[in-house]
Image 1: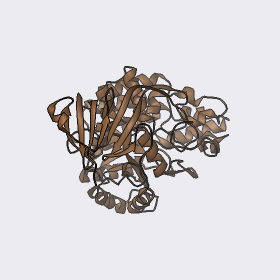
Image 2: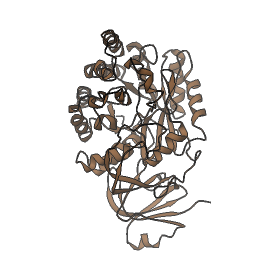
Image 3: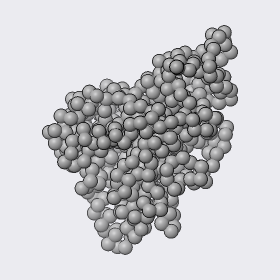
Image 4: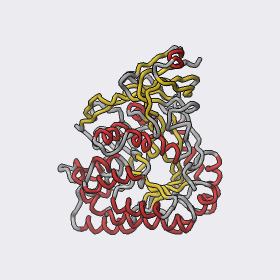
Length: 467
């Protein structure tokens, strides 16, 4: 039996509109919107009525870059699909797109099947998959066509991590040519990994082993160079390109230039690059290891350029790259050698709140907040208008958000399965109150009422921004 729900009296915010409206939900979908207080809205009856007076009513967040249970450097990410999607829901995110991994020598299908097995029946919210392509060969290229047809429409490649995920320029070009033909979108980790490995070796030889050197060897110029190279390869292939976790102002400049030329080039950044910096990497007593991720945190002056890129649409999406490793027992693997610190940070629970703080601080508008966190990721990865908006026919993924509630971020109170918070002690204005996923209550007035297995796999169409 489906429950009818009416959300009354809130300010509905989408990427395009702000309106005081009541929302009617039937059979897991948005059935209608009507101006609050009108005869149409007043006539609606429902088994469940949610009072959103004084609150925002926003689409559930779409986090298009997570790594649940990801193996890395002899360990694996601390969040399972169960704990990670529950934490996402607490933070107002109702859809994640995670990365299935092809092993070198293995088929794409094997990797995808393995990730389906991890996720199925365990997720609190809906999920999809991108495919990490680690081994470009004729079989892989054929499989890319098949995956696009069945709703895995984006493929990630790495210019970093030689010997693990790395693809050379020829492999990248071949995958891009295939994407140009089959409608897929290549996602690129743009760092010059070959050059970085030389700098790592030299730093360690000098006895520079602390976490802060992770940021120093992964130079902004090597992110910019790789971004530029990826753009040119995509241009040669006639393929679209989406650059993940952009952290450096020099890389933003490369994206802006390509977009000014009319190329189908897109950029994503993450909250850690907007709020944290190399100051965190330099924290004493190995505390800096908590902030080791790749691309790395940059000096503070990069933050303003990233916010600017979000305002000017040179950056379109904010995802988390959520890949948590506990400080104790995992990050500690790199004591005495920063290159052995597992790369990744927790953040799936914090993204919507941190970006709302960006609204409070005057960096972005409310509608832009929804655009970069909900609507654009849904469009970029073929989920819109099922996800990412509040409109008739859309899935009823809805968040009641209290814009005036104050909170202090802490590992003591977060729900991610990791022993520290990257934003420990940070005071934020705004907090998720209630979350619905396809019309079912997952968070009810700050209480978890969801369940593992509610979330379903969601096939995707191709990128909705391509010329």
